Length: 447
Ligand SMILES: Cc1cc2nc3c(=O)[nH]c(=O)nc-3n(C[C@H](O)[C@H](O)[C@H](O)COP(=O)(O)OP(=O)(O)OC[C@H]3O[C@@H](n4cnc5c(N)ncnc54)[C@H](O)[C@@H]3O)c2cc1C
Image (cartoon, rainbow, N blue to C red; front, side, top):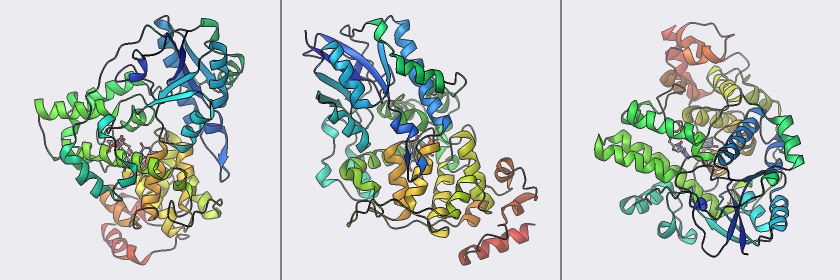
């Protein structure tokens, strides 16, 4: 009897999931899902890796997925513990000697799979560039523009597939959960946590593209700081393996062919290519991304030093309302717009003079769409380490452009009562930057 474990982490979906298909060479497949507490409860640089909101959201998604298997009378083994150890224990129990899994981008997760001592078969389920499109890491272009120019003209993304579930799946129902996982669940499960699962992803896709046709104005609206239909909000699902990037891509193409193609429909694919670029960049340089200058030599993994300014930034108490409002939104909801992320990152790095890795670690803690490559590479990109030049934002100018009436700031900082754009005025404790001055003048005129 030849058995393999099938690890469904990063593949929490029925659609376009090769891991569910018939696997040649095996008689039985054992479905497994693991939550490794180290990725949530440990700290890096003294910052806990996940907020209660992020942990609860992941736990809810995993339990929901296990329940969906149960409803089909199939056993999905859920384990909460060290990934390699859990895999070894299950392999021993079922006498399995192989592991089939989604290919991770996070170096830590890759290492865990390698450490379990099973023969490994990885499928890249979450990239656009799969199979024959897979880039050669040795010749990967250094900039996004070069990557896009090279890839876009011949980009025929793999058609998403619905494989159905292989009849090889097997499991003993009493093995679905072990005692220590049950204990962890009873301590951390919150049935009211956001359920960001595949059903929610498909509903969001359908609404955003076909019902609301929000994809047709995406390029104009994507920089908004909040709002239901301004950007896709697909990141929750893409980051957690509930939505296939190929499926999202194909849906946009279908809309373009059947309804309308314009610069907005193109632009959402352009953004999916950014995600793609960072995935391959992360694979190319691996752990070196976590060095102070990213992969630029000499590598320096020493922990960054945080001072009081970092603490105030985390709490949304810097005194610069535009930054503080975005930070409060992040901590309270687990989400921040792309425009917000760029601005608060730039402020932490250039005005507050803190190491970019502290900000990346804080985002990792809070973002419900946390994705190792998208997060750490975007932070490095703004800091100007790795491949990029620094990108400093002018927060006063940005506030005037993206929150001209100050409504966003007043929503998240109820203590700010100044009318209109004047709410963006920095508090006395903020060091006024010279390049803000012309925009502060504009603020005064608006008052
Ligand atoms: C400092 C910083 C940290 C970030 N951390 C993360 C993270 O942990 N996880 C994450 O998914 N995104 C991250 N992003 C990228 C981006 O901000 C989010 O993907 C986006 O805001 C999510 O909202 P949306 O799904 O509505 O995006 P949309 O604007 O609708 O874009 C569609 C999809 O394209 C992808 N995308 C868009 N912009 C980017 C980008 N700059 N980089 C990579 N992919 C992109 C996402 O998958 C997104 O869902 C970060 C950006 C910055 C500046």
